[in-house]
Image (cartoon, rainbow, N blue to C red; front, side, top):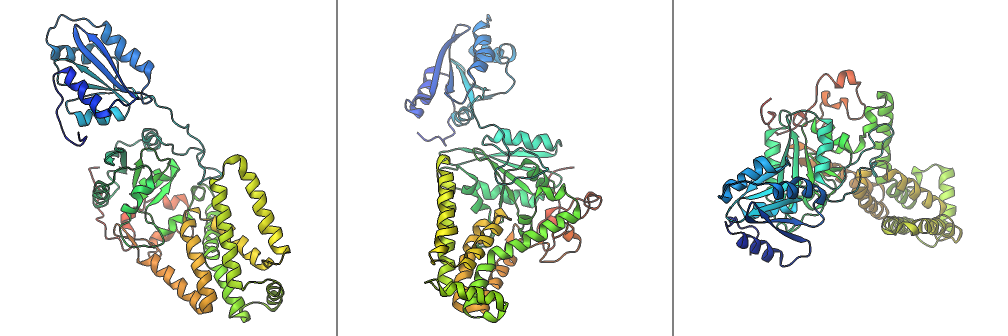
Length: 495
C-alpha cells in the first residue's frame, strides 16, 4: 500500500482502523484508543512520543466523553463535537488518508467516528526537544545568545519574534518519500525577488530523495551553478543573522530536525562578516574584517609560499630567517614539501579525532597531540621548528573565517603540492585558479564575488569597511540589486 496514493477515507470505522493498522504493520508507537461518543463507535489514533497526553485528556477525551446530544446522524454529531465539545484551537478536518497520515507524523491526534467520512486532526504536540542554547560555532560578544534547535516550529517562532511583520511569509513544503521532512521557505513578500522565490521553490520541489535528515542533504541542489570549492548556500545557526539576511531579500530554508538554517543566495564577502561587526564601532569593524581577509590568505597560501621559497626561491626570504630555516632543515630527514604535507595531514587527523572522540577522552587526546606535535617531533628531529610554526599559524588563521574551513583545508594542501613542484610561479597559477573559481560562480543570477566583482561603489559600504548606521539605515540594500545581478528586481507579493 503506497502512502502517496490520495485515497479517500471510509465511512466505516473498522475500514479506517484497518487501513492504519495495516499501514503501520503493528508498529509499537501506534496507539489506537476505542471509545463511545454519543452512542456511536469512535477511535482516537496517536503516535507515542509525539503527543502530550495531558493535553489529549483535558482537551479531547474528557470533553467528548462528557458530551451528550439527541442527534442520531453521525455527521451532525461530528459537527457538534467540533463546535461545542472540543476545547482545542489547532485542529483540521480531513478526508484523505495521506493528509491524515502526514498530520499524525506531525504530532496530531486523529478522531474517527463510525458513519462519518471526515477525520478530525487535533494538534496535541508534546515531544521532547533540546532547549535553546548559545550558538556553538557562531559566537559573538554582544549579540543574542539564542541559536536554532531541531524542531522547525521553534525555529519559525524565533524568526517571527524578531520580524513582527505580516509580510513575513513561511511557506511549507514536504520532502522525502519516506521521511516526509517538513521544509519551510521564509522570506519577506515585499522585499524578496519573486523570480528568486519561484526558482528556489521549484528547485526544492524537484528533489527526489527517500530521506532528508539534515540541511546538507538539500544544500547541493540549491547550488545554482558551477563553483567547485565554495558554496553559494550558507548554513547559519543564529536567528538574528538569518533575520538580517531575510531583510536583504534572501530566502531562509528551515529544515525540520536540523539546528541550522540555509540562506540562499550567499555571497563570498559574507564569510568575513559577523554579527559583532554591526554592534561595534565602524573603524573597529573595518579592522576586524581586514584581519579576516588577511588570515584567509595566510591560511590558503602561507604553507605553499614557505615550501616554494625554501625549495626554489630562497632569495625571497631575509638572510637571518633563511639561515635559521636552513639549519633546521639540515637536521630533518624529509624535504620541505613532504614535511609540511605530513604535519598538515597529522593535524587534520588530530582535529577529526578531537571532533569525534567522546568528551571524557577529549582532554587526553589534546594532551597526546600537543606532546607528539609540539615537543617530541621537534626534539627528535623529524620536523623542523620553522615548519611547525608555519603550520600552527596556518591552522589558527583557518578558524578566523570558520565557514570557509572546508575549502581552505583542501586548497591549502593543493597549494603545498604546487609550491613544492612548480615553485613560486606554480603558486601564482594556483592563486589565479582560486580567483577564477570565485569570480565565475553565480548564485541564482547574482555573481558570487559581488559587489567586489563586478564593482559597485554604492554596494561596497558593507564589504571591507562598514558604513555608519546613519548611512546603512537610509536604504536597505537588497540582494537582487547587487551589481551584475540578473534577477528580476521586482519583489514578490503585494506591499
